[in-house]
Length: 125
Image (tube, rainbow, N blue to C red; front, side, top):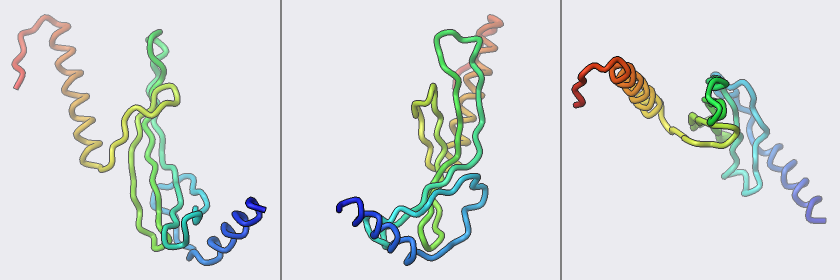
């Protein structure tokens, strides 16, 4: 009986939720979740994924960088970037600015690594 009520609620929500275009860049869009009412309905989507192969590192799994988000029936979109390792979420970034800062920090760390490996004296500001 409980499952029938949930099914009826899902169908009612699906019929009351307007059909909006998927978010730009969405590669996979899921049905709206209206379990908490049409006003609170959202749908989940997945964007592109990038893979970092770490087969040369026996102590760590590969990394995946994935764009994902949610969309309201009005079309409002919230995007995030997840960095996962071995299927486990390690970092979630909630803005393009945060993603860029994270990337810049990684590039700076890689540059410092190369300098240190070359036995150069470096200035850290």
